[in-house]
Amino acid sequence: MNVSPTTWLKRASWALPVVLAVASTAHAAPGQLPEEVFDGLVETSPHKNYLSQSQQNRMMMPDNPAWYVVEDGEKLFNEPRGPKNVPMSKCDFGKGPGVLDGAYVELPRYFADTGKVMDLDSRLEHCMKTLQGYTDADPAVKQKNGSNSDVMKLQAYIASKSGGYAWNPPMEHPLEKAMRNAGEVMFYRRSSVMDFACATCHSQPDKRIRASYLPSITVPEEWTKAISWPAYRVGHDNVRSSQHRLTGCFWQMRYPHAKNGSDATIALLSFWTDAARGQPAILPDMKR
Amino acid sequence: MFNKKNSFVAATFAAASAVLLAFSTSVHAEAKVDYTKMSPEQLAEYLIFESDSFYLDQPTQEGTTGRDRLVQDEIQKICSLRPGQELDQKSREKIMAISRATIKYPEGGIKLGDWKKGRELAWSGFGWRTAHNPDDHTGSRQPGGNCYNCHEMATDRTGGNLGFTLTGYGARGTSPEVLKYTYDMIYNSNAFFPCTNMPRIGVKGLLTETQISDIMAYLLDPESPVNENVNPVRPQK
Image (cartoon, rainbow over all chains, first blue to last red; front, side, top):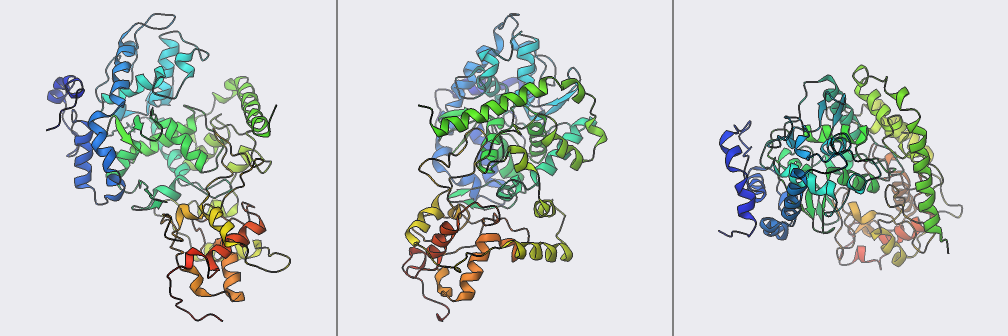
């Protein structure tokens, strides 16, 4: 077996959660490496074109540059930072302060302290401001994109602690349901000069834009890969977030620019995460 | 010098900042809204237009705003079908009738243009994008037709498969009926396929009359690579 230099690092932190976690579905396997999760999906998916379209990306997964971003994120996460000199490990991502194992696959979720449904991006920003004392003007908060941004490093690390877990966004709070259902309406809602909805490109399997196969929301095995962000985007040479994916889609759909962490974007993320429910997350992933 | 692209981008961000300012003063008014009291449809509209989620004042290439782009017209409303929702016969007929009425023809009649220009237009996906990186239509690049994104055409370039293949389209010949059908399909294909995925290129003014005639030539000209090595299945009139 080909063991990459970073494999020990990736495996080490899994020993405990693997023992403790009880997989909620047959597919979920906390602690599996992203490429192992991916291979399992290729095997079970009734549609393979989208998943299997890049052999090169599959081959590079063990050496995914996102692992270095995850490593940077771990350091940032644990060190006291910001004007208040508090570590991010005091932040509650839904399962208690500092509890990260399986936290990301349960986002977006309702947080009582803000009274809002929040995604990883907005929760992180909330904690950077309230716990660490940063303001919107600080580069730590302001810079949202790129492997070198604090936000991307932290997101990559936090999400990596959900690799192999089944997507399981909570739907108990009425706001969580309301956001998910509004997100569904938005996903199928056609507008702008080209009449596009998200569904135009993402509701039938085995469809392509030019040579690129598109993930379909109707195929959960494809959809979990589609929403497995943060992922290293080979074509961008950067780790990208869910919010960044949305921006790219809105651009192609000829929509105006959406605001990072805004409620419309969180509603879409609630719906798209719910659509992958039960499927294991590939984190960090590697995409075209 | 202050070039046109920069001024467009600057205008975009000036407008965006104005939106931010406007909303920072109305946050308290917004806080009273209870999302759980709205239907999913009402909440979706609220989130798009009232929740400070989009830069709604962002300028567009057609001189409108982001808000105008997100407001649905009648066809978009009817065609926003979710799983389990189907277009009923009445709506089908209504969309086809509305759509037929939208089609306007060139003054001198439908003519074929330059297939070589049409080939590049069919390949280009440039144009009308805004969001974080607005397309500048005032420079040397004109908006493209986006045809290859969804259709296979000449096989030397890979086309998508969201639309049906157009390879060998010219086998239909160039009768007035074929010219009209092809023109209508590009202008507003809802006239034949209600709630099609294809943009209403003529209705929305996405391409000029000349550009449409060039793309039609790319489809129908016997010299066009779209029709290379393809045997005509129907005799030409």
